[in-house]
Figure 1 (tube, one colour):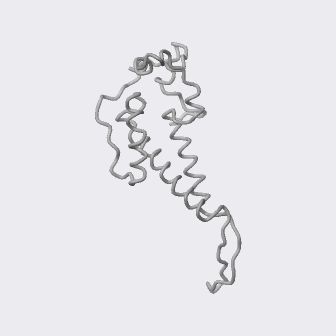
Figure 2 (cartoon, one colour):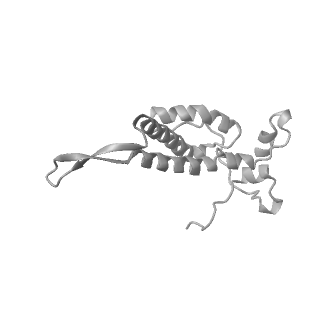
Figure 3 (cartoon, one colour):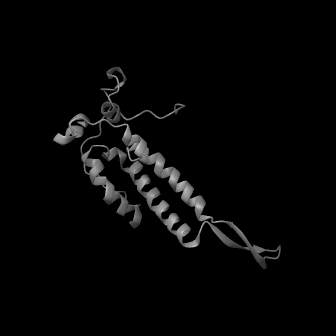
Length: 160
């Protein structure tokens, strides 16, 4: 059963944010190290997004073998969002749609909101929702406090 309210912040982010020690689960199960591969169902466009971001997220231990489906969903949503945005750019936000009579004959046209805007809005929502889980939104990233940035590997030390 799901809990109402905001989803819990991942433990790694709690550590990076400097949350109180009594709020950090030190017994959280951790996935075994393993190769992180994109699922076969990803489209070519979504696979391109995967290849752009997965290596960096894996290096920071934000992406683990247990997270591949959620991350793949984010990649798919980004690809669908890009496709919908391209259609809106090409066709415009308002389009001419045919009007038909009861016999199915075209009787004219009407101006209406481009249907691709619905796909764009849905994909936007998914990109934001899944991206937040991986710290990929500006507001999530703005809350991160990573000490020793100049020394490199500071975040990796905290996440291990």
